[in-house]
Amino acid sequence: MRVLGTSVLVFEAIIVLLAIPVAVVVGTISGPPWVFISTGILLALALVALAGVIMKPWAVSVGWVLQALVMLTAILVPVMLIVGGIFVALWWLAVKWGRQVDDLKAQAAGEATG
View 1: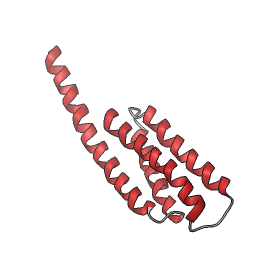
View 2: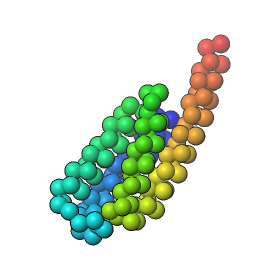
View 3: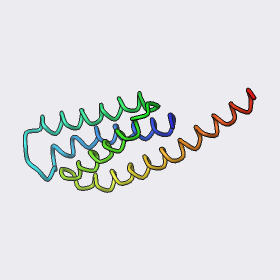
């Protein structure tokens, strides 16, 4: 889970940061640019912070919340619905396959010591 989950979250943070200028220039909601910039930076920081604690028991649940928040950015930049959907699928795969890899590693470690 560590490698797959971290990879998805870090790449997603990069995409969120790249979406900030798009939201400022062509966003569907008008408003002060600092709102879009600060929101995007906070979301990207949350994604990176979660990548740092990905092995905590609560991290997957928080990851799903962050995925929902990324999907909500489609309100400002509609194409984020597609990009967010891709990252939701990648997050789901990272959780599913990451747990399988962790289980196999634990099983192999048990066999090596046993």
